[in-house]
Amino acid sequence: MESTVIPTTPAIRAEGLTKRYGPKTALDGFDLTVPAGTVHGLLGPNGAGKTTAVRILATLLRFDGGGAEVAGADLGRDAPGVRRRIGLVGQYAAVDEILSARQNLFLFGRLYHLSRASARRRAAELLERFTLTEAADKPVGQFSGGMRRRLDMACSLILAPKVLFLDEPTTGLDPRGRGEVWDSIRDLVAGGTSVLLTTQYLDEADQLADRISVLDEGRVVAEGTPAELKAKLGGDRLDVTVHDAADLDRTAGIMAEVAGGEPHRHDDGRTVSVAVADRVGALTEVVRRLDTAGIAAEDLALRRPTLDEVFLHLTS
Amino acid sequence: MTTLLQPAPDTGVLPRVRWTITDAWTLTARETSHWLRQPFEVAVGLLFPIMFFLMFGYLIGGDMPVPGGGDYREALIPGTLAMTMMFGVEATMTAMAEDAKKGVTDRFRSMPMSASAVVLGRASADLIQSAVGLVALVLCGLLTGWSWHGGPAAMALALVLLLWLRFAMLWIGVYLGLVIRSTQATASVQILIFPLAFLSNVFASPGSMPGWLGTLAEWNPVSASAAAARELFGNPGWGGDSWAATHPVLLAALWPLLITAVFLPLSVRRYRRLSR
Image 1 (cartoon, chains in turn blue, yellow):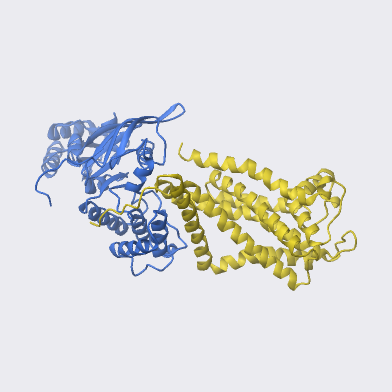
Image 2: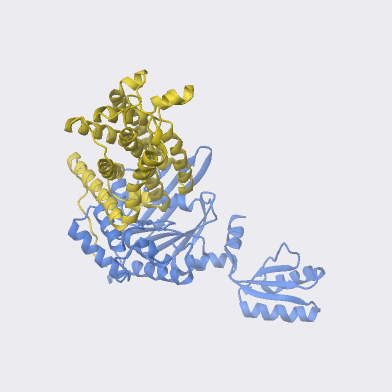
């Protein structure tokens, strides 16, 4: 590894990207800087513009304002240059189900304008790297979801692109499949590829991303490392469900005192949650005080903030 | 980390044309690989029009009178050939919709490959497949006693006109495949194709149909190609006085031209709209 820091071009630099569909603005001044060799996550509710942003950067959509550079190539002026430097893994595994894994890789290799020999060689390399050699000649239609995804990723990496776009890559996969995809992503990044990842799963962004941008209604509403974003929310949450709805106000008061944050009442009228910094300490203290106050708690839970709470907090 | 593989960028017209042809060829080879991996589906596809011919020739059309006392089965073969070309719309449409649905089209568009190669590859694969289908049906006809009386030039012209119809249908298929993204909807379209095949002179005389239906049937592009093939093969046809009936070869050349002139630009526009 290099011992001196050499300034490198960012993997992605977007400034003020705008996309309009008639009166509706899908992306409103989207800014992004992804340093080379890092993973950047895009989080947001449906319709926030994550997929629109990725599709624009992957040259699939035209944009109405702003500009971007992907791996040094200008998005507006040199789309073919961008295409030579990127890989795209979309929401569905974009592979040919009738052909075998090997045939798929060869097909895309040829479409990437590799010679027949190079395409064949590259196919063998990628099959090995994604542990698909054993199933290489079976039709992809017979693959499990995780295997199909691995092949999908392999196909996007044929030219060893500097930047990889992953649009909700683990949607619909079982935990094993998700783990496989995560491992592949980690390997890629270790090898120097930069990744832009959109996801609905907070834990996925948490696990993989170096930095996260939260989008809402086409705009970035928060940006930072996963730790920074969670700190904005106060980290974990404590939920208390009381037996008697009449006790709710007193409970909320106790929780506010102990945790120091604003308690949030749930719709069922008997549950209140609050952000807590010291998980176990807050739980113990709340339990003790509820006991002293004679409030019967039906349920107590410590949990991570849900994606809804992140957005509620960041978009309110 | 493997070194970045950078094939030479395609600057200049000649390399781009060359890559368009190569990419189209790669995509055609993709289709042939499909056929090799799905021989059963291929066989069914070839048998489908043969089944129609056998059904109408032997089961239904036994008593069908043909003007001039010709053999119904002889009239049926050219008709079925034309019908097969029309059914080609489904194959094209389904293939386009499948690729779009699965994100394969998106992958193609995010790659530095030629955009027109996608359609050119589809076109050549579909035309090859249709040509094979034509040959299969002709062989079936020969086996059941059909023959053509026009000589090799006539046969060649008939096949060209039929493939010309298939080419036109290709553009309808590409357009529909781009418009109708769901494969369930494509199934509905397939059902609608059937009435169009019957609203023609393929199986019955348009003269036997009520008023305006008969006119539609006579002027149907499939009818034009069927009648043209019948004339070129020297097979009996239904006759008729309309311009459509007396100038089938000309009409069979014009209809696909008109269809292509409408649907080719529509397809291109639709494809461009994917980037909207």
